Image 1: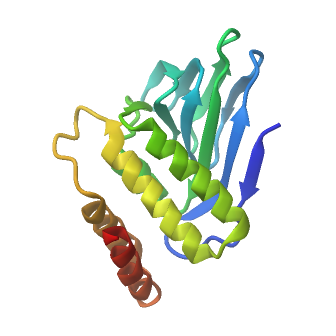
Image 2: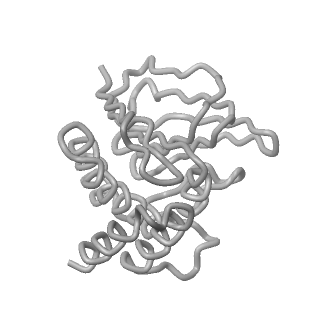
Length: 201
């Protein structure tokens, strides 16, 4: 059975978390083709399978396996299935809001590149596990910090040929926070200072 944490309170900026979860699939795991109504980031930590994406501009079929992430954009129709011999174990996080697409783009996903390889899978696994834990036990600001750390790590570790100059964790945090605080500057400036301090530790 999958572990799923819904995060209904998490609306502190132009994006919000919808849910986060973990699932150990079986060889019969099969998501029927259907449209998604928010953005979803998946990280495969074991096994493999197949991912098919249909959008208004592209149709892609990809192998998903341990050490890869795949992204689903809002309104895309997708399906994926687990390999019968080596079913996959994966984490996911759902996001939505005005800034959600920019976060997906920032990581390196695109219509033609919905699947990316990760250089440091152990780090990403630990960050997903931590975020899954804090969303069930901690305040929304602790969740926000853990979320940004995960997004930064995905950005830095994603194997994307179009990203020639990878940025440091602090630089990524600054860039994300500038985007997040623009429409909500009054409410986010203290949080920005706190996250930058924590990112330097």
